[in-house]
Length: 364
Image (cartoon, rainbow, N blue to C red; front, side):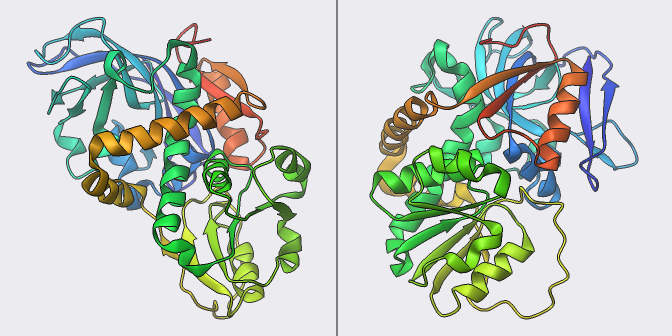
């Protein structure tokens, strides 16, 4: 059973290990991992693996503590079960390792899904332990499994970021500035904000400039070298790149105009900075999407939140069909090459990797 692992302190290092088959205990279920989406969001999972517990989801057998298993959103099928909560043949959507099998301990089950209550997943935010039953999932469509595994988690993050900003009246800002504008999460933010007529400015690399401009969800797109061309009006900064030089440039250029600075991701994790001057206020604040989801669930109810997200998701997926190309990456060698491209920032933003360690990814 092959599994791709990543070094926890140097995510450019990967290796392929063979897991030993183990018999199920009472209450456990074996899943066949069919396919999963791979984007720069998975790079963020690796960078923040310790802080947010991502390495905890799928522990490596490595005793040194150096290696971990990056989680990815995807689809799996029950192939063996010693739990009354899951039957062989059921199809699930949720977080999976870059592997071909996964053993879970189903619990807290309802008609829509269930939670893996294995001891090692205790303390991880509930969303990451939850598996949806595709037969009862309101957003599932057989012809859009690739969209769901690749884009839906990033759409949700973007939707929730925009909802948080809207909930705060955009902190009184007249424009929302988003770094790593080509990333799927940034596009989720821009699409949601654009749909409510907010002004959105994207910051991206020179190589992605024209591609991002053509997507039509940013009112303005600038390169990282052109931050000083940002209009000096009250602004919010959504930082997905995690590039310290860009953060400093934005804070200094918008000094006195920046109303809120949000840290979301770290797609430029390998960019170092030797800047030592003090960062002008406001202090960047880390955004944790599940907190806003919990708030809205309490205010709107689970069904109310689901209805809003479903409507937004349909519009986003329809829009993505105009530009997104799905690229299967099958087998360990192709997966490692795709990971290298994502970690190095070489991946084409118009391409979405659908990974599998099986012969044919689901939905391909």
